[in-house]
Length: 214
Image: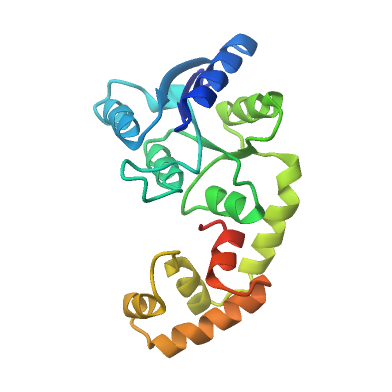
């Protein structure tokens, strides 16, 4: 059983609050707190060098986690990927708890083993930690309906539609998506029309938010 925890959150008050609650209500030890991407990289380096054993740790990671230049809001997804690649299972812990964010965080592309909303009682977070520490998974019960809704939507995407959806970001243009995929911009527009219709949204912003990519 993993007994050591890494907490990643860029809000110092919340970071310390989670640490204190966990240590006062369980036998877990919060060994590391990371409030920025640099902190995460330094922690990762210790595992890569063999100074720490991945099978003794798990991580609780906020999704809405800014990079040093404050340009990338959801770099928590990348942090989860990197920790997971080292063999450290992660629980996504976020106020962004719609079905799309849960689906994206727990997808094979990102790899979180659990998801808990920041609005949940602390006991739910501890339940998630217990499950993941013992090799299981945990999705907060109230979030499952939204997760299944988004999974049902994504299962209707064709392979090409999924490629377009995965390439889409809030910052890139249709022309840039077209160039990245080697297709015509008009074709991208056609795919987006289909994707928005399947997701029940009207524009890119709504689509990315629903799919947990914003």
